[in-house]
Amino acid sequence: MNIELTQAAADQQRVAIFKALAEPNRLRIIRVLYHEQREMTCSEVGAQLQISKSTVSYHFKALRLVGLTNTRQVAQTKYLSLQQDTFDRYLPGFLATL
Amino acid sequence: MNIELTQAAADQQRVAIFKALAEPNRLRIIRVLYHEQREMTCSEVGAQLQISKSTVSYHFKALRLVGLTNTRQVAQTKYLSLQQDTFDRYLPGFLATL
DNA sequence: TTGCTAGTTCGATGGATATCGAATTAACAA
DNA sequence: TTGTTAATTCGATATCCATCGAACTAGCAA
Image (cartoon, rainbow over all chains, first blue to last red; front, side):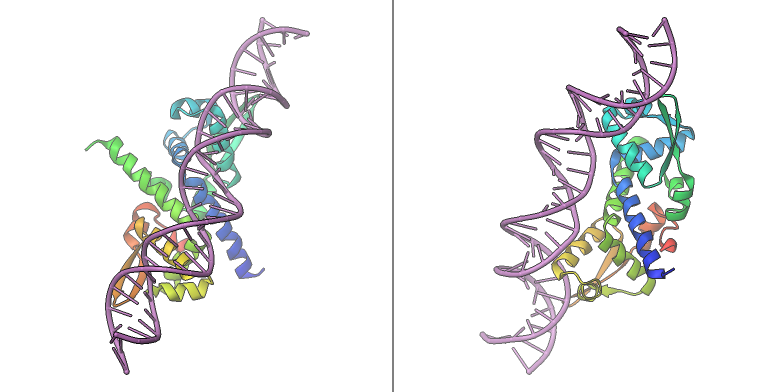
């Protein structure tokens, strides 16, 4: 294991995470999930944030791809929640500032 | 003071900070400043990161505008260092993960 | 003044991305 | 089968931004 390679990989992950959070609607999704401490669906978030469901789906995917959230599927419905591990590793203490 | 307004303002700041950090070269600048624990000049960073001085200047400005760094000027030379306060307020614990 | 050094700004370019409606897929229900 | 609901994908568009070299500004020194 080369330290520089793993650091480069970690940096790539950091940049991806920051990009994901550098968007007002995605940040609001994170806050809602953190404060409500429960899973939420695409439709539910779309209604609360007043954005189209396609846009919400797009943001959900972005958050999931960088590991900030995870998804639990029940029938046609997908429930989104925070992936605490990722926040702990890359942004410890951040959620508490929201 | 309206809580929602100040939260909106804080969110705007958060998004700006994440945007600033969502760029590989800027993240590297932050890491170098954190690890070396000293001020660095535009030229010095440009040489170390192998990017043109105009690009470095552009990134320096971006970091300064969101309050992640501060600048001390001596004659023509500007010395850059981290603004610890901002990290403490918006990203507590982040620097230590680098 | 004449250079030299450190940074900034400008203009142009190429690439990324946030957004929406429409079409599509998938799962369930009647 | 037909219809309904939840979410994804597709196209298209508009905007943002990282990058560079060149031109410029400002401070210092012969």
